[in-house]
Image (cartoon, rainbow over all chains, first blue to last red; front, top):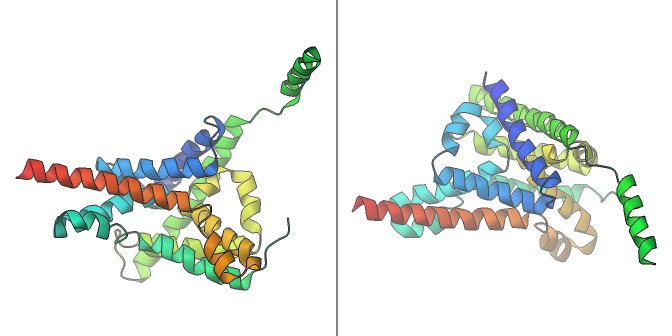
Length: 117
Length: 151
């Protein structure tokens, strides 16, 4: 069942992005930034975690979850170490997206040649 | 002259293709949904064969998806899917990976330090910036709020 909901919720988040692109006439950069901030705000109100329980990867794969886990890491660390944790805990939960992008970006740059199109 | 240019504008508007909104949304829904289902399949596999819980499985899933994105980007397949799917490939984390990896590959000719290192986050940088800064503001507000209400 979680497969069905991950399809539906993940698809719907992508439709929101498509609407921002087509109706809002925003650039992809603006669209993705808005979605990340949206995910962070949803987690601020405690609404993103229930969505993950409900839709699994449908909520964790879209870029909105990046904002969610940034807030999550910051709050967890803030609980342990006080206010400074807001800064230090930021990447506690969500390190893998960025580190994977950097590592595979470098490997990709070594392995592949740019396509001239 | 102005008569002519206004005629031209009318003409231009009449031939400009309308954005097929519904069609684009359906494409984004299906491709985006499929990428998420694929991510779910990876998550389920990791939870079944390795000792990941539902909370910790997000990170290895993301890394695996970005690894696959590297291959698809390098062979030029991702761009073709992206042209079809629009936001369906941009919004999932694979779109973030694609932005980083394609910038890295593209600027390789300028050298690894100035080219790859300097341009890697050219497109994806704004996502990190606004994600981190908004998370900072939100977490700060929440933490301060809990101090005041919990004293």
